[in-house]
Amino acid sequence: MLWSLLKILVFVAIVALLAFGGRLLMETAGGMQITVAGTEYTLSALQSVIALGVLVLGVWLFLKLLSLLVATLHFLNGDETALSRYWDKGRERKGYQALADGLMALASGEGRLALAKAARAEKYLQKPELTDLLVAQAAEMSGDTHKAAEAYKRLLSNQPTRFVGVRGIMKQKLSEGDTDTARQLAEKALALRPKHEEVQDTLLRLQAQAEDWAGARKTLSTKLKTGTLPRDVFKRRDAVLALSSSKSILDENATVEQQEQAIEANRLSPDLVPAAAMAARAYIARGKKRAAVRLLKKTWESQPHPDLAHAFAEIEPEETAAERVKRFDQLARIKPLNDETRLVMAELNIVAEDFPEARRWLSDLAKRAPDARALTLMAAIERGEGASDKVVQGWLAKALTAPRGPQWVCDSCNHIHAEWAPVCEHCSSFDTLSWKRPETPEVASTAAAYMLPLITGVLEDKTAAPAEDAEILEAAEEEDGEAKDTVREAT
Image 1: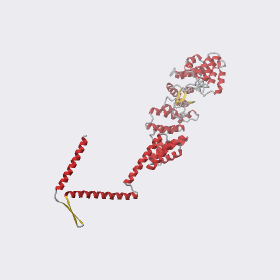
Image 2: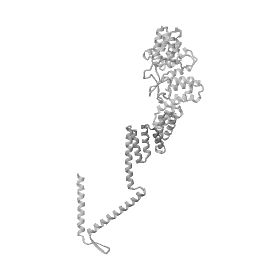
Image 3: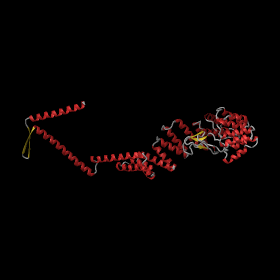
Image 4: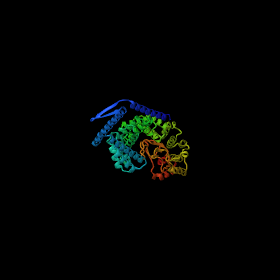
């Protein structure tokens, strides 16, 4: 309100000043004389001021008309003018509106409408670095992969959009199943944007699938340097890659470098069971039995596992059953209440024909966690203690239909693996296998592969085929002195 009053007062003051000035000019004597073509014009003071104002206005109008004429000539010549800029702004406004509509259509899942809006935006904007990306994504949504590929290739020619083009073609190759080309494109994309987490993960997964362990470790180091991976997770996954590169450590022709990689894998992640088992075998191959024992005991403290028991048995392959029970007592004292410890010690005592001790170790495991391994061991104990064939057959019948117990299960898709692998064979996830009981109900038709009879000599896998189920039942009908053979047939 005060501002309105102030404006009114200023307006009144200006009008009053103009009126006062006009009155003074009217009362002022004299004036101005102008002679034009022999005609004399006499102007008063007020008329002189008005004439001067008209002259100034005329000069201003003349200059404006002159500038308009010059602009028209520039326009006709094709030069940039205010008029062309005005029209350009109109086209730009329409182009950005079409671009926005295209993005909205893309977000709404209308691929064809997005393509039409992208074409309109390209017509008005003439900026392919903006519209080609919209064209590519809209074409992919519409199923026109050829047009999407062309748009991504056009993006490659522009340095600011080069990464987008490489990444887009990489994803197309992945969808087509061309993992080799996709891996090469992922390497180029990572070179352009080292901090891009999605490209890092994609390249790491592709390198692991291709068993390019050296490249995968390099990519993993990049993730650590760029801050997209915690250091503890980096150590674990680096150990997985080091372990994967030394998988041939069990071969007779394993090199010293491969043995070193197995030991390095265990150093990076001491709780990684496959790394510990391989590192122990590497030490055994070098004759360093104490180092192997120390390593296996440390990992057993973290997670008891049948693979560790296998490796621990290989340290002294020529020992008797009684000597093996005594030596395995080192592991049993570390985790005496663990289920795996009880199963291993029960097996060892069955082989040593100490059936009461085997029953003591097995305890209530056959009732509390009845899997194929525990039930088969219970059948062997009953046979060794002289139980009737009916009792033994009952335990074996339960074992044939019982779950297999803990296995290597993918945390992402719950797929069960026969042995540990760095990449899930079902969903291709990297470092997702855990030793646990499957969440989904799973029934075993045979005894578990890890039912290891720790008898003297080098241990071998003795997984029974489904056709051998009848043989297992027949083995249960043999004499009391054949308990050891019952365990072997079950495995």
